[in-house]
Image (cartoon, rainbow, N blue to C red; front, side, top):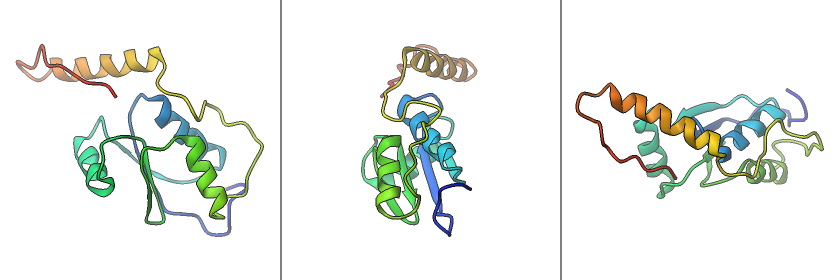
Length: 133
C-alpha cells in the first residue's frame, strides 16, 4: 500500500456497476492501493436498501470509511476527505479514470443492456420501465 497512513482504513463503497461517479471512487481506491468492500447496488438490490437505510437518501456513490458515511460523493471528494483526515497522504499521481465525472453515454448504454438482459430472463418482465440516475 503506497502513500497511506500506518493503519489501513475499513472502507465500504456502495457503487453502481456502470457509473462515472462510481468509477471515480474505484479510481481513488486504486490510486492509493486501498482495500475496500464493494457493494454493487445494481447487481444486489439489498445493498441499495442498506445504503439508503444508512444514509437516509437514494443517491450514489456512498462510501463508508471507518464508520463515517460520505453520501453521494465523487472520487475527488473521497480523496479530499481521506487526505484531510490523515488516512492517506496527498499524491499528485493521476488516477486511472476521471474522478469527477458523471456516466458516459457508453456507461449508460452498458447499464441499460445489463438491466434489459436481467429483465428478459424474468418471465413476463418485458416492458418494465428502468430509471437510471
